[in-house]
Length: 134
Image (cartoon, rainbow, N blue to C red; front, side):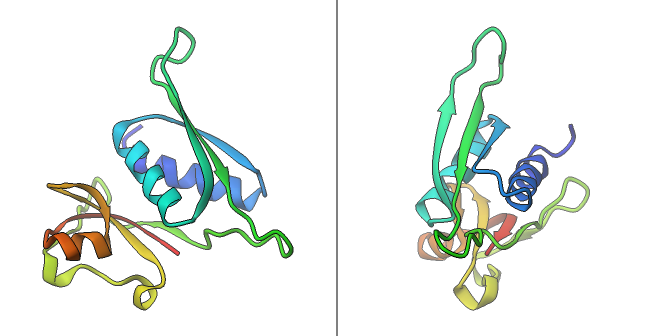
């Protein structure tokens, strides 16, 4: 697999389009940080990190997706990958994008860790734009 972040986003997108409640994703430190951000911002219901064992040496992440209780509309409308392995997208603090005029979030990988666009502006740090979520 050449792009594990795109695989992460695609698995979540596919689970949402199939109206699944839970999705299981192979684990990595970057994916764990992205999952924590999605939980903190209210895009997912909960998550659980499953440690590595003999059957699964990499470990996995179980994500419980969030839907509106009455209309069953998912909390995540769009997940889009921005920086790809063939074309990385780096921004400095002055040009960090605002997603839907601040209603969505951009997840950035910075020198101070993985964070949202608002946190990166507050920390005055730029980095690689991983994805947009809204």
